[in-house]
Length: 64
Image (cartoon, rainbow, N blue to C red; front, side, top):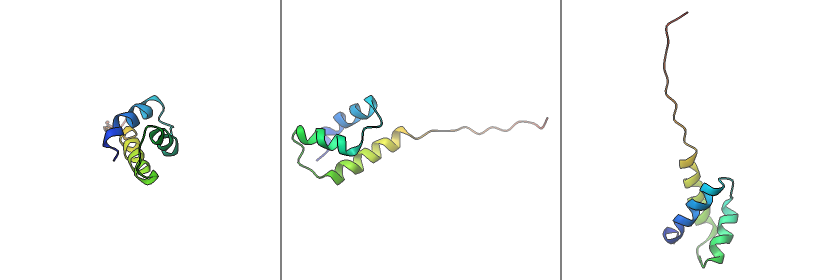
């Protein structure tokens, strides 16, 4: 059900990563989305996790 709206969700989260799933669900409902809040919540969590992954490179140096 969310495939049609995925681009909208990603644009909103790029605009402001602090948007909540509730806010996004309200916007999608106004656009004609008929799915449940739980579906939106899971998709928003998945997208946010991808944005927040940070990679670290470990390196070691000689003593002193």
